[in-house]
Amino acid sequence: MALRNKYWVLRHGRSIPNERGLIVSHLSNGVLPEYGLAPEGILQAQAAGELFFKELENLGMQRVCIFTSPFSRTRETAEAVAGVLKSLLGEQCMNLQIQVMDELRERYFGPPLELQSHEHYPEIWDIDAHNPMVAPDGGESAADVAERLTSVLPRIENDLKGCAVLIVSHGDTLQILQTIVQAVLANKSNGHGQDGLQCRHFDGVVNSSLLSQHRNFSLLTGELRRLV
Image (cartoon, rainbow, N blue to C red; front, side):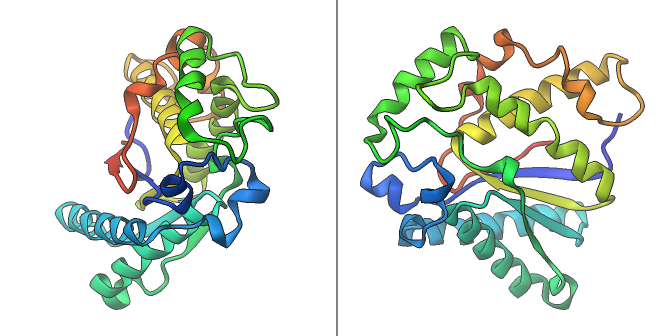
């Protein structure tokens, strides 16, 4: 079944935490301006906006909606993309709005790792590969993130039609989103759930075996990718 909208995902541009090698995953820290984009990240976001514009041109689409995580690095990325689109599309894109969606926030890696070295990431991903239901101390497991993401596309599908939807978020969050969405759409293409995309379609599809593979969908900073 075809969805009502077309979707892209974009990982935020290179950020100050990236440059400093820090894990900034709690919302209270993530929204601070000092943890926004680095200069290189702004350029990456603008380049992603230009690439997105070309894809919209090829598809003949002009209606755009951007959804972003509330973190400063993602909001600044979304704003840079919106600026490029408004410049290139002119009046056709003047009403473009950026909507903050809390479900798209960064995966929380827990108090022991917050503001610590990003060299700890592989430790978490190793846990995910063995058991994605296990969370780091005080943080979110891959399964926890998947649970909050199951409502994202169903909600957008319910509210919008005929839009090019750009989802701006974080590495782990987007890896997990891609994993569960592709699994659900593959299941639907086999004849299941022909009544539109609903939250319940993620039940049973999102499992340990599936989530353990989320690193297969990794994105570079500033990387744009068609979701569906």
